Length: 292
Image 1 (tube, rainbow, N blue to C red):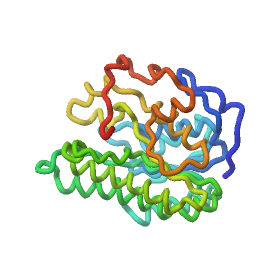
Image 2 (cartoon, helix red, strand yellow):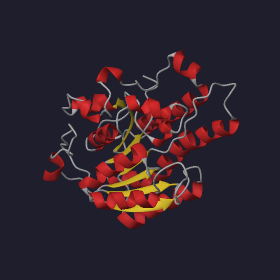
Image 3 (tube, rainbow, N blue to C red):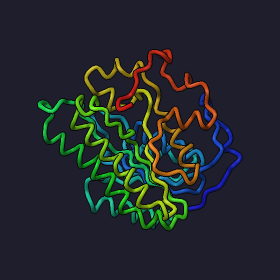
Image 4 (cartoon, one colour):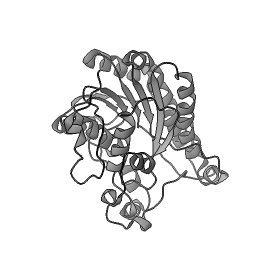
């Protein structure tokens, strides 16, 4: 559960403009979701440093529409240089979350970082949204984020340099975002309120609490499976930009209560050219993400 600077951490990933100044070597990360997409990219970047990663995700068996399981993700993390503990579990289930926290402590001696990655999306307007989907978003996004953070708090305090990172947007109260997709906006802002509240609550506990959000659309299976998604992601960036930004946040210390964007974090880390993260579209043709 120790943090260290490692000479290898100063080397950027092939093709990435980000040059790390710190390392996650030996740190233990507990992540909700992470079997694919942004979560897996963040976990893989940490694994390259030699981090310990506990993945709790629902996908234990292959999904008919989505690539990857928690077990194939763990294999990828081990191949990248980390230690991985795959757990099949649902962030909506209290017992599953408690078991994941206990397993992380038992296997690796503690928890240094919690990444609230699991999230459900439905951009339907109010009259069209199915209430089961509404409940799903509230349960995974808001309750799941709160629950995982809550149950990990004792271990995070023991870390001495704990960190909670939640993939949620800045609290932008422009009515535009509530009016476009109210159900989803409430669910994502609930995650962000958890960041705001916990940062204040834990400010004297050596636990940093921050949120991270992409400036542009990110190519993920969730986006590709939406109507028109395969066309949308042609003007997206790859999830590696979020992985590098998360790495920069998690290897810093002291900052708390921030709602970072990926570009903001990486500019502060010295990145000036974001084109390598694009899937091919010109920078001025990338699709901006919502809530910004």
